[in-house]
Image 1 (cartoon, rainbow, N blue to C red):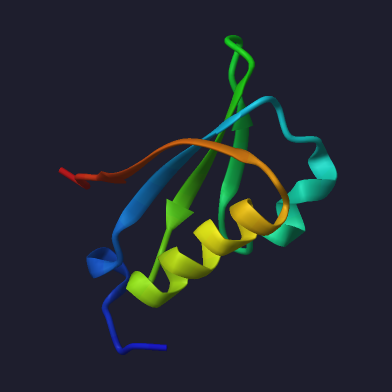
Image 2: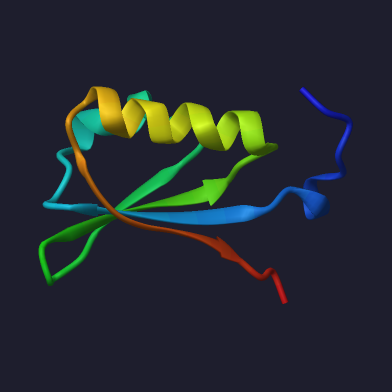
Length: 76
C-alpha cells in the first residue's frame, strides 16, 4: 500500500455487461456496484495504484464477466 493522501487516490469506473447481484460486493473490495437501467453494472470507487487496478481486472476475467470499459474519473 502506498502513502497516498486519500484525495490523491484515483477513482475508476469499470463497466460490466449484465447486472451483478448484491453478493458480488465483497469480491470487489472498496468498490460500489451500481446496476444501470440499460442492463450494465458499474464498479465505482478508489483504486490505490496500477497493481490494484490490474487485480480488479483480473477478478473480472476470472469471474467470466464481460468488460465493457475502464475509465479513470477526474475528481474535479
